[in-house]
Length: 190
Image 1: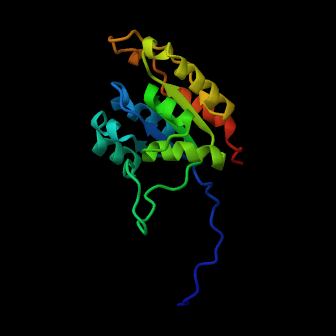
Image 2: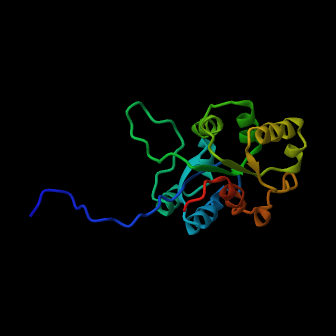
Image 3: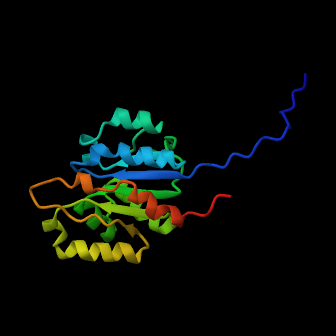
């Protein structure tokens, strides 16, 4: 018996791309498992980063079981291991008025916003699926924020804002649109 490692050729298994899903606090955040499922069916590995407020809208245990990774919501301490691999792409879904405006302004007061602000500098393809009401969407800061994000190369979904005080629109929210936007941005994996 030899102490040498096995030198027989191993079949090449390409690494799956790793998707961060940034989840914001909204009534439909609890459905993020739909995007995770679609991503996994399309051969992505997935990790979830939640804004602190989003934690109250999602089933943390179910998402962690589905992805196999802990949900990130707070910064790591020095020396603490990284719980997620580096992102190949990022989907922000659902993205709230607050997160979109802070991100475009370069505000990094949560882990989720810090990751989004740095993604631009790292050149990580990023898609955002806004979910907000029409009164919020009418605010001039929102349009300016979308323009700034587009200038940064962020891909923006086509969700039409719902009526104020009515919630809803979950049936029109296309979770899979994030992957439709991101997939052409990734290098081909031959």
